[in-house]
Image (cartoon, rainbow, N blue to C red):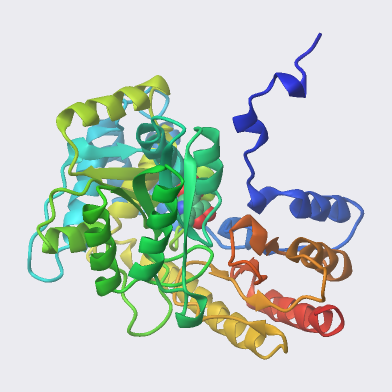
Length: 456
Ligand SMILES: Cc1ncc(COP(=O)(O)O)c(C=O)c1O
């Protein structure tokens, strides 16, 4: 008899990932029937028209096909050729061979330099150790590795924000751990409060759950909130008090839109506090920012404050899958090592970057203002990341899932119900990305407006 559903583990059966759930499946069906669909369900920039950066793709093309260095050297600027030669020289065997399990050493060194420079703004030079950096297939694989390490029994719990990005809830379920949700405060722009964290811990202890780590997504998905330095310090102190590791998901660190708002990494704030007792796993990705290279699956995890024997175990886990994909490693290298001001590609690189980021900022503003004009919808400021997570008023007895399905059927706009990310009981939300081109963002607002007036 072939494999039956009853043969599968409960962990697999109970794992949910809303971003690609039934509403998206229905959207695809409608599209196949000829309906125009605006996909606002997933932060996948190039699927919504964002162009790849020329420099990055040129270097990658030469690395993938080194023969072009000989046959078409004049087709590429000098610095592109030089970067490709450096990468090919350092990688020794090119992109068709496995690298060491942690990832290519020169890429890890470049990441360590990037972290040190990014986090040294207050004059304190920060150190990052390339031996504690792992190249990963997108940030997702790094997050999964960290959760794999931390969940040792079914009593082990991980604090995750509510709302959260469902990679966390799904992976915790898959690895047989327990979720400990802590609420973000919508009314204060989805900020994080010590009281909410303590309440969540209290509940966990009451249920006999052993909390192992806290996940923080900054800038927030789906909330769009950016944490202040005080907030980050508070989380670090909380983690220390309760003996928790921190998982700092910083994949949206380049996506900041509000003037005066600044991204600060957990690593930076920890170093300022001279904190060496809290283990920290930080994640970054080539999928977001202005790269939007989701399909290339580049990313890294940096680990701090863990003993060398734990580092050896992480390396062992990485080695089970041999290594992260090599084109993704090259992408990550290019993300942390962009062209310099004197380089021929610099001007174009900066123009392309500014264009992408200013469009995103403009769309965030249009969406936030547009949603807030609709009666029954309220959207907190979109300070960063790629999403709006507005609250919606629903008719009695209706769910946010029904709302999103009806919105899709009637308007072709595909968003994700708040249930997939988590929300306070008695509230309802949906998540939409800010990624569609500006004219489509306006169409989304008009469609939601008309729909909400008759449905909400
Ligand atoms: C908060 C957050 N973390 C991690 C990821 C995973 O991204 P990737 O695996 O493409 O790097 C995403 C993707 O949307 C995300 O929103």
